[in-house]
Image (cartoon, rainbow, N blue to C red; front, side, top):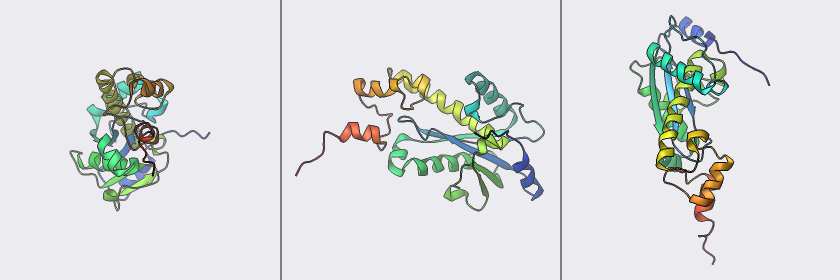
Length: 212
């Protein structure tokens, strides 16, 4: 598997084109069975970039927490979400894009260029955004956004774990681990579960089909 090292080349290229406020955007939480999808937008200060920025998935929890604080104190940031209800209503891709759009809109300064992790640009960001596949491993701004989004969502899932104990969300963040799946069988579906996701939908409706 090819490994990438996050750099500032995409941002430098955007500066060369005359852009001055460049935001990196990433989301976390597409795969879990429970909880919101969370996005972050980050405008780094090119003269004060926290060392060690990398794709959040490659960092330890302790390192993410330290970088989270460093990013918040040195950069412009916004965290935004799409709720479980919105995920079920829109579908997970559109809800993820909605969270991204909200994160960009919530920045204290409006970016004139946006770097998006992935291969699709949310509809409301078209015309001023660039999609970068595996961007969280390539762009320092997107890497910073991935860290902010990951830590923020993990904290939400820890809080939800207190409300709905037994599912292990403080450790699995709502992903379908064995513990989570066993808890679904034993404890049932909570209001924090995504009803449009197949395992949850099947549990809720498999015994309620109407036979003609």
